[in-house]
Length: 311
Image 1 (cartoon, rainbow, N blue to C red):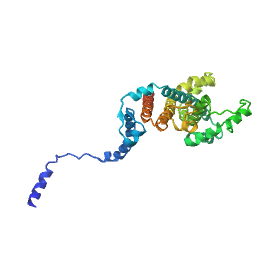
Image 2: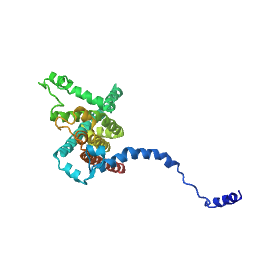
Image 3: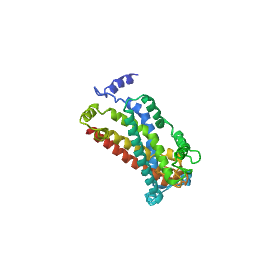
Image 4: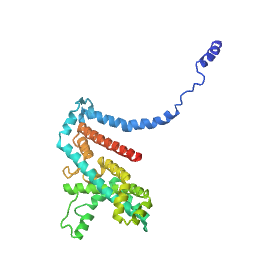
């Protein structure tokens, strides 16, 4: 007892006066979020990239023992016409979706920028296209575009514009156009919301001054509205392009990448490589390329956003 009583004061003297223990509470609160991100985002991405450097088939997935092949998988994919076809289809699909979604979204934003009865109700109904689950909207479009009993064929036949049953999802060019229109239909309300917010930020005094100078409605749109919407327009186009470039569910549910490979975008190509042909290594190459392009587009978006904020 006497020895303990003498050692206790000696231990307290090792603590420097004014020294405070580090506060670990913030790190403990952050730890679950960090662990979640590492397990659900970082680990799958790193695993996918590593898998693209190994020879991985179904046997290696089950039994292990994949062998290192370096860049051979990348050389193999970059030399395949099917891979580049998927890249081209992805670009056509994304650019077509951006153009249609932006044009429709801008038209709707200009329409709802004016006061008229039922404006809020109609705007809320249009948002259904954005909030509907993809499986619902894809099946609605499959019904609309069906060659035997589809509503579009019936409408075109009634107008005298179609004299036969056209299977929109069964022919290459109409199928690609159909998935572009279906995707643009779901993204148009998203573009409308952002562009409407941009329109509201433009001061009405600009238009009053333009009207006093005798500017027509088209001249006001061309010289005032469109230039002043440029920052928002850039954000809308880049975000829709990033979203559509990695879209898988709409195309897979409507066409499965067919007919043939007419609508096989890069995500669908990667899916088929992995789960149709059990080539998990080349699928990893396709998804890695997809990830690099998406990251590059995201960097372009943040750079453009920073430039607009600094202007």
